[in-house]
Length: 282
Ligand code: NDP
Image (tube, rainbow, N blue to C red):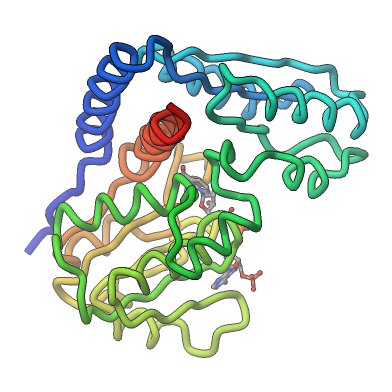
């Protein structure tokens, strides 16, 4: 049996079309368009690519993209002043500071300075706390996209056993929180986990967010399980995920490809969070 492929591109295109409709309706009622401010510091080529594609997607959805490009030697104070001015700007509904920031910058201070109600990345501790306690707030885009993809296979996740491999603040931990909120029974695995294959074999839902090519083997997957591969690893063979796709897709019930899986959903969810922010602001 080969797995159903969860088509992230198609699901993301759907979401983006819905956001564009929402933006058009918002424009009618509010008399303005939602605005997303993106701050890029320095010349990191991967970051520049991400910022470009976020800007393009924002404009395609009918929103305003406000881009701030600063030189690599920008200091923390200058960045804090920029964030404060974006916080105060009524045309800005979302603020995104592209990470990583250059070494001398105090990344923590910059992220903490963002108004939690404009933190469309959902990285601010206030939003992490809201997610953990079931209050409305912004949810980090990558795990939000993963849940949307999961729901195309399992509209109701109640009672399912899920394993999240990875415990980062931007993927693993919020992913676990979202699955708990969906009434899954959640195991969070990491680099110190004992017998990872056994933890994965016990799961109906596997989320891999590690950053090691093909760490999760095909024979770790329970037959029929749903596998969401968050990993994006650049190798000589091209972009690969954290799951051995060729082997896992022979066992799983459904699986996301890399590329074309989680990646496209992340930007679509960013647009969706920005529209939500604009609606809350009015
Ligand atoms: P981090 O490096 O912040 O976290 C990796 C996690 O994996 C850590 O919790 C670490 O454990 C765990 N880990 C490392 N080695 C092992 C191992 N051998 N067995 C089990 N767990 C292990 O990465 P991110 O969460 O930021 O990203 C994870 C992956 O997802 C990357 O490939 C990244 O490129 C990709 N990504 C993709 C996105 C998308 O849009 N599709 C967005 C964001 C990330 P410990 O805590 O113990 O160190």
